[in-house]
Image: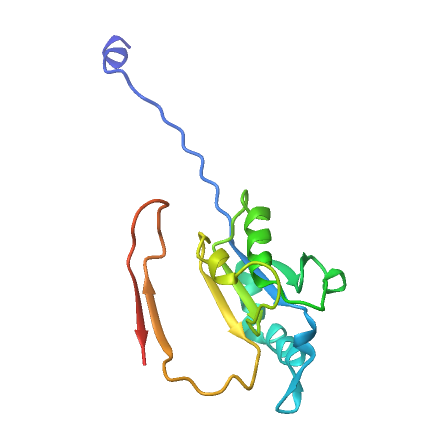
Length: 169
């Protein structure tokens, strides 16, 4: 026993917690979503996307928190101030509300136009997580440039620089 005690054995214990990735799905519930384009309303296209098999697989693999927005953020579309789209205010409000349990990324389904409140570009620039925006407008026209691929390190640390490569076509 003496030689063992002289070797000063160290017993360590590590407890690991694993959780599913957190994703916040942000759905536009403003009146602009009722607009019809190419024979379908934006909200009906959104419903089709949310009821697709691909979106179902997402919900199977990550913890999804759904929020609705217009002039405010709400847990139900019935509680949304629908006569305005305050995208900048929504980003700021969600960022504050999710400080303790920040998601890995946001999925934003919207036309993307803000007509009230803070500038969305200013508030989005302060986000710690990426936002994947799905444009729900069908008549957005043609584009001169398209983002073809984004390459980034999935692990990033606050305060440290990281490189993000974007391929444009």
